[in-house]
Length: 130
Image (cartoon, rainbow, N blue to C red):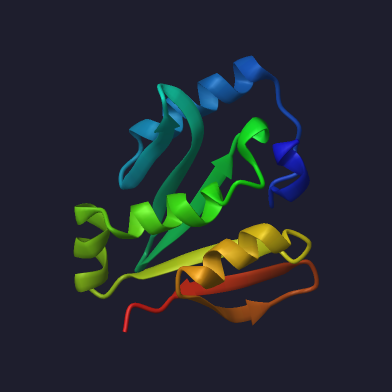
């Protein structure tokens, strides 16, 4: 389940999630992309701005895990024109991952994210575009 590796543990209904998603996607600034393969949704990635930082969140659907899509979706996002502009403006890209989520941490590290903070259960990583 996606909740296992999510920072947010609160359970919700599908209807509640659709309502949250529709409200959230309208908020600015948010950047959102869907990874597809042969018309099938593989996962999504989004960036949410908070002050001078953009927080990365992504999910690979259960049927497509263990196929390196996490690394690929981050890599593709970093090549997007909108993300290049964010980085040129000196905003920081931040990702927070549970320590147990080794595959997500590996995907982030492979894409030049470096650990900047460690708490009891999470790692905070920042993209290094130097």
